Image (cartoon, rainbow, N blue to C red; front, side, top):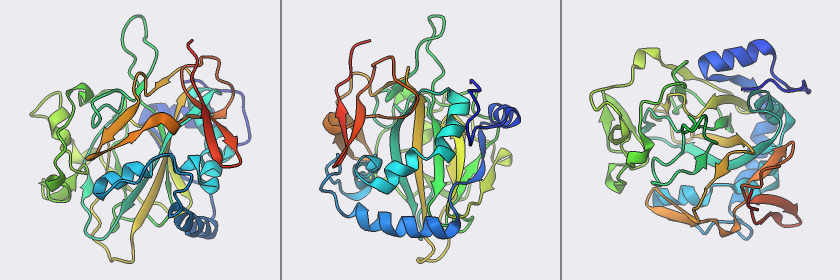
Length: 318
């Protein structure tokens, strides 16, 4: 990781060292609570308008895929992924030339299971195909991963299913994503692991374990309670999960994750479609967003702002 030239919200040297040690930083306030609550109300209304959304609507759990990358058609989400309070901090970790390659909503409603412990380096775990590929290091595959900025759009509590993190677990992968997982719609919201209602949206992360007898050490974990407008920045290779929603129907949890990589990383290489959670999306309207610096590699489709959200320009061969 590289400490770049200081900007308004750059991390201090001590914060960078903390991130390298623990694999995360947060909670960090990005918005005041009242501002976040108003922004979320507006975004909720705009999500219903899919006239410029880049993916067709899905059904069931697959509908979450259709709401990937809504920063490409909703202005408030576009502003969010390019917000200096976020980008300056991520640039302190990854360098000044940055792409946002995906954003996702993570809702949790009354009765929903907790999300299973997991890590992601290539994001091939569900689709079977690497979705991000870092340059090789001395002829060896790079470790990979993405820096995720997970922002609480609502209160995130133990009762409504807040995130859980295991500090310091980001440097060793416990899972082999190349194995792939079998999707089983009936498994969603129906599994218990060590007495906790926990799964992975119809998948079972145990299928990827390098050691079939290994189990995550829950004693290393802690719950990350956040207010609306606070975020956590973490490596996707950090062991992370969430608690089940045991609260009231009114007290739902909504998180929004923006994922960042340096411009030398290839996004969806050789892939025109992503299949996950029993559904799929076609990438013909997709583009990464250059949120900082410049892209001198030309590996990826890069979205350009227009009067109707973003449009992408085809990638160039490097």
